[in-house]
Length: 192
Image (cartoon, rainbow, N blue to C red; front, top):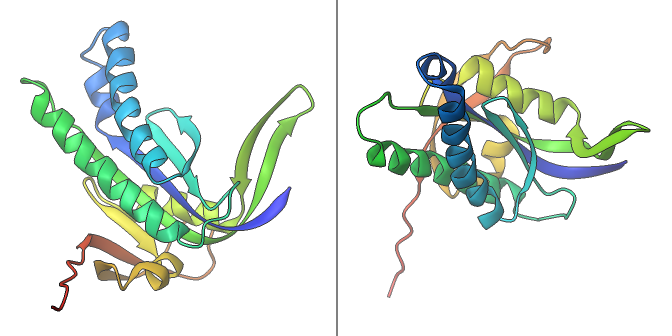
């Protein structure tokens, strides 16, 4: 196990469970596989690590196992691209319900390595940084939103426009945490 400075994202497919009730099991599998194929490519494009699929949620890590000085920036760009990819998939689907994503991102120290039992281990990350990313996704972000923690905001604020959502109470934290709604990437103008 190693300590790493990393950025962790949780992205949940909102409405998938409800939509699945009206679909055949084979269709559910095909739909989630198509969606996860697109979303996973966004993670890999920015050299992130797909940590795991958790039902209809994707956990990704940037900065572990391979250190990246700009892991927060890579992660935020990948998650933004995931939201755009879903918009394209929704536009291609005729009729049927539209899916949305809800994402939480946090940056900090994690413990990274093979975790599990002697019979089965998977590479993953653990720690407060990971837990807070999950809480930002599950407790703060609304459908269609990307919410980032204070530490991520500090690293990407020069590149993205964000709206401060105030201090938030989240499960497992004694103190409230700062949260920011990610709005868009800033447009840079080159001076000639």
